[in-house]
Length: 543
Image (cartoon, helix red, strand yellow):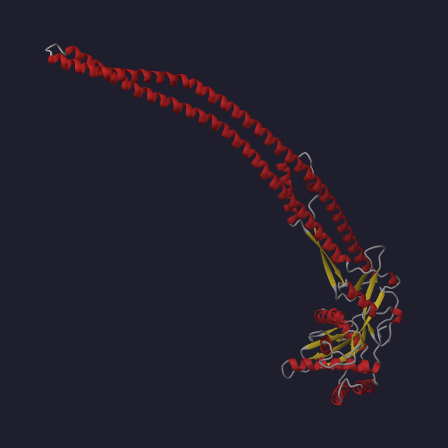
């Protein structure tokens, strides 16, 4: 059990906190600023527990509407587009194109819906449980002097909101089931298509090897034919060269012999002309033979060139077939790589959709609490303290969380801030919730006219400063704090004097008529706000 603070000491603590906050503001603003404490009161903040059948559990609503939560839902591609990818008869290229299109479809915005739930308490579940642990049900609500804040809507409205959230959760569950089923089917379809692609690649490789082998055999046969056909021509020219060399050899010998014989004929005074004729004929024969040799050599070179060209042409045909086969294999290899990449992108897109919807579901579902022990409870009331301070600039409201007797003497930063630098024997029952609660509520009070006016009116109606015994109880509490060493005699006297002066000023000023409250910026007045608890379960009503 959380120890409850003694009433006089608790009262003194809260009034010290309000006065310390007021003085802190005065020290931080321009000179001439005046702020008066208008009312200080214990209030009860209402929370509604909406139970449902089965999961996800109970939803907790802040009936004043301070907390709210918006949930996003991104639409999925049409079911026909999902099913079209799974067509097992598609060619790998078409399968790849559809996978890429679907992955891009998942990445693009198909449309977004939003569900904003007013009042849905989106604190961390542990903090929600802390809140419920320090709240009480209607039957246990203490002092009837405290004000009970009203609900913005009837209970049925919140039950409808919970039903809407459950419908969204069911919708997300359906999407998750569909996506997980599709992912399994897509993996199977990808494996099947990949197997078909690998078979097609193996077939292309086999056919390519066969075509290359056939082309090589054909080339070898053509080269053999070319060599055989050109061999006879070359041999014929070689025989001509041989005869020409023979003619040259005999001609040169004939020239030498004829020249010698001509010289001898001259010396013998015979006729040398036959010998000269023989030499001339030999020279002509040699000249013709050498010309024949040159022509035969040129012809042989032309034959060899034609043979080389024909051989190279045959080999080039083989190379072209090899190139075509290699390009076919490369196409299959690149297609396989693109296919794996496209499949990975599609599965990653599906996983992203699953993760996104799982996160959307968890964001909504994790704020539903398992509260079987509170099945009969609908309304719980969180006891807080609120103060209204007024200045020429407008109205300021501050709130304080439920307190408990401190467990130790250690000084925490949040405790010092809460009590304006003083350390007192009380601390917030839950420090994390105190931070969340105070900042959220005070921001709402400064921005929400309905909440500000309701809170001001109820704070005035339950104002402890109107009690004729307030100064006596305050002094009793200060003496208790001073006796235990939490504040000094000077601090006690200072704060008691401040509240006596406040009491004197309040006596000399006319109070606002019941049912009227000034707006938060001091610019005018609002009519009485009716406090309607008719939609809630029976419980205490505001004083």
